Length: 511
Ligand code: ATP
Image (cartoon, rainbow, N blue to C red; front, side, top):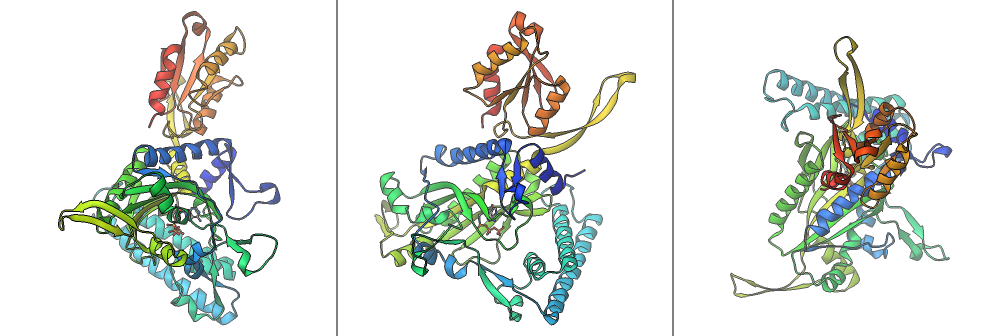
């Protein structure tokens, strides 16, 4: 059976991956804390992204910009004027009726579409199950929307109806929902005051995206890192959005983390770079263990004000295919906006020779291709993908029994613990030997020593947090310096010299 989001949420809490924020006060909506295993997994994902950007590409360098930025930044980026969602304050019975009707109409359309898709499957119009063009994902997606819409009608607060309308894409700003007079635009940025005097002049925002910290530093970085176009700037950091629709666990949070890379290119070459980064990013997700059949590209039909082309890399979460990463061709929108508002030139002088004119390309404002992935959404996709339940057969003949095993099949490179060391018994010098092995490897890998409980229980515990190797220390170890290494996925065991562990684990956890 497929795991539901509820299974993932409870597993994440029980095994120290993700906790609701301030849980003892009943939590804070759409804010979460990462626990001991969660922070390791998330750090590993972030490090691998950072490496894929800045270590594997000489022409991509990193920065770490502040969360607070000059307020004009957000004027330039369009966030002050455009970054808002329609919000319904209250509904009288007539408007309430209107909302119900719109949502019900949408449900009817979705149900029709679902039947069409199911018929297509039955008639063989969708040829191979489980392949990227299989339509099961879309059917799930529709089922999720229908359920959500019906729930919202049942609960029926203006807030729920508002959320459902957004989810069903009814009433974008300026269309459907503005038929209501009580709709007001709600800016998604969090604001606060700097200094002692409250007032408009001292209002600043918590950044709603990390990208602008990169744009305003474009020339600082280009000059100090002596980069030539094309080059990129990468950044990992927190972003804040006062999301109205805050649900689906860490998928949509009010405080989250982004990993963004803005790639500055010569105008006219952006199409090629867009294609290149789109493919590079998809391959990266696959290499980390997200299967091709659960990833798809979704081209935007409606483009944001800054974009020339935009595509999402979607992953099939338990609640359907949803955006995990966005690749955007942003043209020179951001740099020219900052140039206008700051009155500082954002030009680059390109002294490469244009073969058509025989002269240098000269001065221009570079175009930008951006890749932007949410660390938390990537984390959620990784967890959803890794969390598996399988039936295993143990013993032989009469003794044979089947049982189910839950485990996290995480790529060893991202697993919170790389190996757990188990002394078989708590005596005869075995615990001491286990600690000796731990000490010899702890500078290279994150390890744990577990002495309590039966060996089977200890294996189970490590399976549940995705530890790829368990190392058993037994009496033979004391005689010949060998240990048994048990593999998480196959449950196979290999005897090997202690001296080989470093190379063996190192090979498996490299990426
Ligand atoms: P959505 O349409 O889901 O609101 P978006 O298109 O606004 O997302 P972008 O502004 O393109 O998202 O941000 C880039 C990435 O940042 C997204 O692909 C996502 O992974 C992540 N992200 C955006 N908003 C949130 C959020 N509220 N919680 C967690 N991650 C987010």
